[in-house]
Image 1 (tube, rainbow, N blue to C red):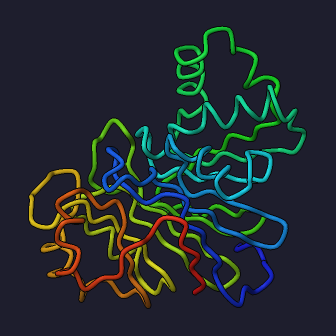
Image 2 (image 1 turned 120 degrees about the vertical axis):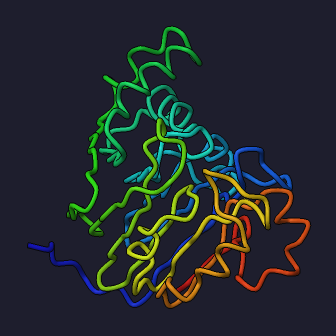
Length: 254
């Protein structure tokens, strides 16, 4: 049974970061802030996310839920810093829900130990709820329903695209991926489909390029497509691209 939710008139999204792993163009790593009434969700939490939150007069205590598409540092590397602040500075008492591929807690133990030796108590101090997602299984959360689909990226990072049903509105995100047939499912009927497009014509086993995305566009039945994760090649040729690209600190209403 799908959890009943208050119907949303629009999706309110803030782009905290939309760059690739190398901060191409001097921009921050991937993180999108989904704003709902008294509830804030991060979709990915790249290494620069704590900086982005502070730039927007927010901090880790303002976040209620984090959904991670995969385990690469430009998509989840901000979590150790966010959690450290929550535990050591802000004395967080409100539950933070962390939704991800399996194994996040173990990865955080390793990351915290490597980055801040002696911080072993952070995870036990905080009120954290770890939830592992499974492909194709709809998960009912407080403010949205979530489905994920495997995509083609570095296998060890457990790459997925995500679909959030937000009270009748659908926001979907490809995660990092080369072309994969599951992108059709991820995008279908979405009010907004955010799709990675790292390269313009360079071919990669792990990332999309613009020429492929343009050829496959007719298969992606989303109401609106925007691109993200642009590398230097894409930024240099952005005037040739007909998809709108995300911009840092952009506010999107759909």
